Image (tube, rainbow, N blue to C red):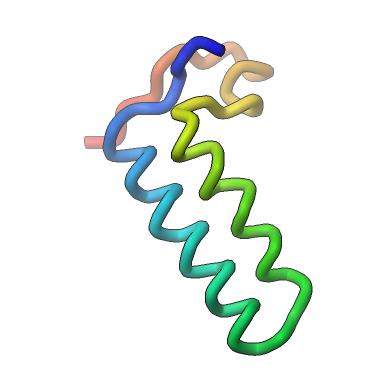
Length: 61
């Protein structure tokens, strides 16, 4: 997989994904598992949606 997520975008994905997982765990709700998607895409620095849209490396400054 070729990286297509910038450094700031990765950080945001990891933090928000982890926050969603923890909130879902705290509230004992299934939707917290949706936080795994941005969390792991941030760790892998790859977003399949960016690839499908033809975006190369997105940088958030």
